[in-house]
Length: 135
Ligand code: HEC
Image (cartoon, rainbow, N blue to C red; front, side):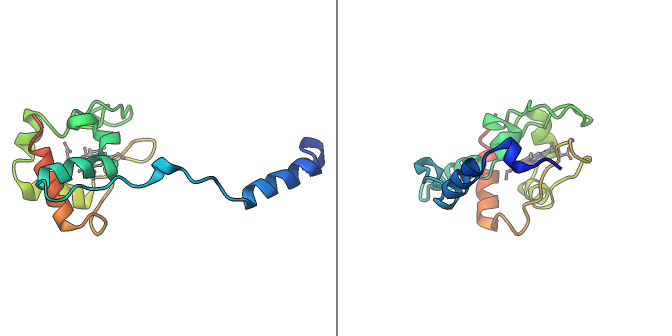
């Protein structure tokens, strides 16, 4: 067992504790992004796509290409393009997969999280409206 006193001094420990107790500074940019209303569902969906983090996995404009090296496809699928629209040719199919998620393997394989009960129905519809604007 290492003795803390050898690694970091008692003074440093109490400085750290004082620092932590003082609380972290407020980060002005950490406010969640406002979701625009009154500009139609596609605009709302575009903002949700960013706020809910879809963009981190499916890329800007649903272009895909984010590496998922141990998955069968090697990348996270796009949410745009002919193949996507052929497979997900109804709103109901798109909403169903967003709700249920899709586990394709254990970590470090990245799977589709399930959002049922997390994203309300009107926002799911807005996300679909946005996805349908993608080429
Ligand atoms: C942690 C990464 C991750 C996040 C975040 C994520 N997805 Fe996914 N998504 C995936 C993966 C991986 C798949 C592929 C699942 C499969 O092949 O069965 C997928 C599949 C999909 C599919 C079906 C497309 C296909 O070809 O299988 C849709 C639609 C989808 N996601 C929409 C969304 C939406 C909308 C959001 C945001 C609310 C979102 N995803 C967030 C990883 C993610």
